[in-house]
Amino acid sequence: MDPEFWHQRWAEGRIGFHQAQVNALLEQHWHALGLAPGSTVLVPLAGKSLDMAWLAGRGHKVLGVELSDAACAAFFEENGLVPGIDSHGRFLRRSAGGVTLLAGDIFDLADADLAGVDAAYDRAALIALPPDLRRRYASELYGRLPQRCQVLLVTLEYPPDQKQGPPFSVDADEVAALFARDWRIELLERRDILHREPGFSAEGVTELHTGAWHLRRR
Image 1: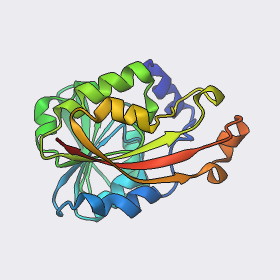
Image 2: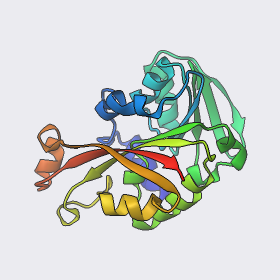
Image 3: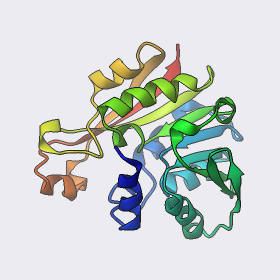
Image 4: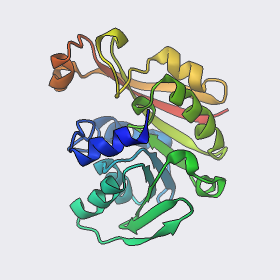
């Protein structure tokens, strides 16, 4: 998937993937990770998600990575924050209110960027990527997370022949195929959300579930 695809989506305001409220699975299951205040949480493909402000409000240091610089700027503006701005490797970095956003390609993260990460919250990254990039992402990003790191992963499941992603359907078998070798995987919840997503129904999707997964290193 070409980066220009995402830049165009943001430029045109076609961001149906952006949630206007904090994710319910995050609110319900974040405690399962047992993180102490001050822990650093990585949010990959962060967009301008309100989930980052929620995490920061619980005392975490949030490190978000987002391809679109416009999305990064919008997060701080919409949350009434004036960030400090500088360059960081291949990224443009903004920081304020306990949140640091790096604008750039997540595959450009250095090992040093990931070394301080205690947990990751992946709601919009894995399901945004087509199959070949999902495999690369699981190997190259998850594979470089510190041994102590935990992940709260949120997925979507729908009949893949009924819709072309993104977001893509990632079922339990694929979660296992991507992560079971290196991570202990626990399904915390799987819920039916089709009634809350009229856009999917309008595209002909007849089943839609979301799952919350807790991943811990083996």
